[in-house]
Length: 151
Image (cartoon, rainbow, N blue to C red; front, side):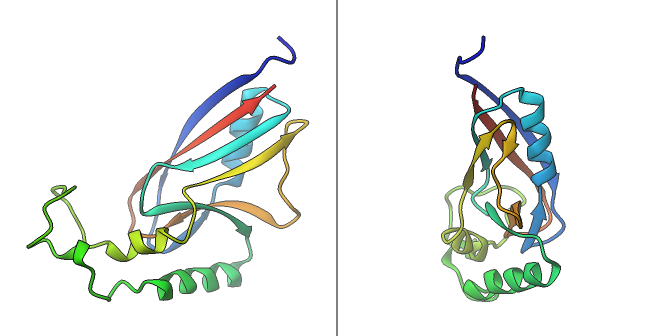
């Protein structure tokens, strides 16, 4: 029914190559929006991880290098982190646990999600804006939820 609020969501899966890495997922988000049939509303792009973020920025190769360096310098991997001390840490441990305190600290300054207005079925991104999955940890599988809400 026209005018009725509708909500749809899809989970996208990615395999990142390294951390930090800015992976442009804009085209995938646009495909989810097109499949939804929703013309007006809001799109939420959400990372299901505490060491991977979602950010909107410009996709320019030299800027991407700058941003990766900037994130690395915020919280360097080689700094000592209590989270990485597996002799004393006992909470939220997994078999293949790796030292990634730096990635958690970097994530503090980034977003878990972004919200983009949707008008006439078009994401209202600025001229140079793109949506990025930001890997902060290491090469690994990642899940991003794209939720489209509107009519």
